[in-house]
Image (cartoon, helix red, strand yellow):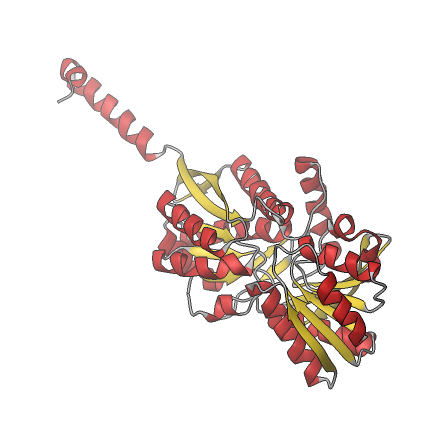
Length: 381
């Protein structure tokens, strides 16, 4: 027996033991939620925006004092930088597993989300992507994989529809950045325009670190397409559009959600106004909780939302909702509750199909006027 307890009366010793046991039983439980995204490099502004959304949700939940299974739970964000690199993505995924996270949000990049998915599947840990749109992510068959955005199988055809039906394009040129995201979106777009009878004049590949597109664009100028589709992120899509304008190319440029950010005007200059882009979700201005979220986000971080913050914010709440229904913070029990998710949040109603995709996805289409992002249309898919 402990020397201190030995000196106490039986009643005193019992009291000390009871206090020690109850203190241990009801002590705060620290529960880690992982998050990974590019926090350095060309896409850092998008990754930090994504992480900010998750951080805001965690701060709110902690302020309300979450209780699971009769025990107070304090959430902790385990944030990791995947540098938009597939190999780094798998390294940080394993690190989060080793850190004991109960669920993970990330990445907003298909190129890192997809290879990391196997690691989370092997560990039995829920992974919710707020921005990976490549269809392959949820076609791998992993029961741990979910996403709160639409897919390129929806986004590519939506862009194709706009190009053919609204812009009346009969010929197109396509350029992608050779990543899982850019290449996948471009491929879906190409299928869409061909299905509608348009002619694809060329399909070129660059890379996600490129800064000079003049060689490709000079050749495309000679082809004189009605529209050009660019599959990639804003860090390269902005310069691509700027250099196209400098070469006197008048064709409208179509792009996906990777390009469709608030930072695009800084990256493309006045050429931004020649871009039409899509998002694989509801426009922020049309989200049920969008206005309130914008106010909270700007107050907390003193900057505008880029694109994925509301999705990662809802992803945290979806994980906590699963914890509450499971009455547990055990990863296996959280996972077991995920298929029955029916959550109403900032982005709208979230329910998942058997693959982990949204049951009711939408695609929003935008253009830029004097550098300001403006909604054109919302397409239900």
